[in-house]
Image (cartoon, rainbow, N blue to C red; front, side):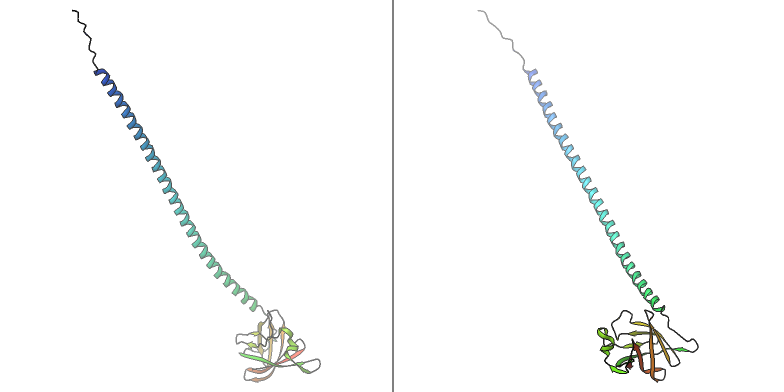
Length: 211
């Protein structure tokens, strides 16, 4: 009887090859995962850095704006104060520019008193008339006040030129409004250095004042 023998083939090389391929595939997958994680981490770091930079720039901008606003406020406040001082100086300068006629041959003095108008005489007819007739709608039932510093205010009528300066030379009083209009004043009676009754001419009407 004749026997046939089959040659047994070893399977070890195939197993080794499969194992190597599996290891390579697994290694490739692990490398790909690590690469993706690394890229993601890098992007996150870049994003975080950009956000931090943007936040820092925003904070700096806000700080600069806040500082600028504070400086502007201080400048505005300083400018306002300076403007007020300039206005005061300008008013004072205009006030001091009022020129009061003077004879220049007597001692100049001042007084402090307030006077109220109580009657008016038409100098053309010598007839008494009402104060409303003299001053019209500008009449405000006001007074005239002379101050000891040589200034006066006239609120008898509503006018923008309701102040000025005056001087007393002997028994004569000379006064000038801020618009350079001279006031014709006659002192009727005196009590020491202060007149107790005045007559002031307003456009052809003698208006009588007393204290």
